[in-house]
Image (cartoon, rainbow, N blue to C red; front, side, top):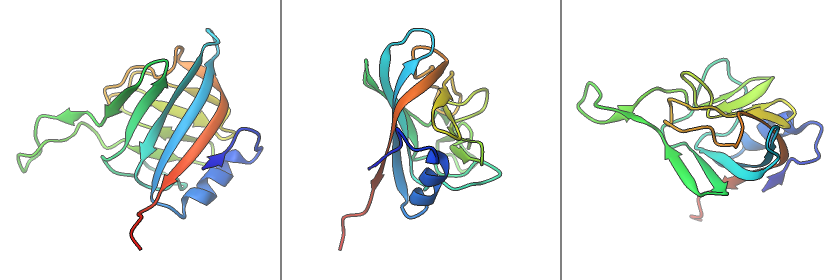
Length: 154
């Protein structure tokens, strides 16, 4: 676990540390700018965070809320792919630039954080068919936790 709550170089540190691992969960303890209600929400991504010019990752990612309600929003599926199998509605899984990290896309990000990992936003997102994860569309993070999950086989 990496706690980013007081790190001035949080964004670059997140990217640097996560390039070593494959599967990540990013959990936010945030206070909404308007309502000042503590909420916990975040995302799981199957690729490490690294700077890209386009979206990357896979359809195994999801976004979630833990407090005040526990909900999981997996990739929204379109009816079928050309092969007749269910497919993701879009491929806006995860994005990391020098200025931000984001999960989901289409009309809006499910979760967006600035390069300081302090200010963020969440809106209805087509990728997960998720609502705004916070009590307001913009928020300030109190804490950011990054967990990596590694294969336990030796």
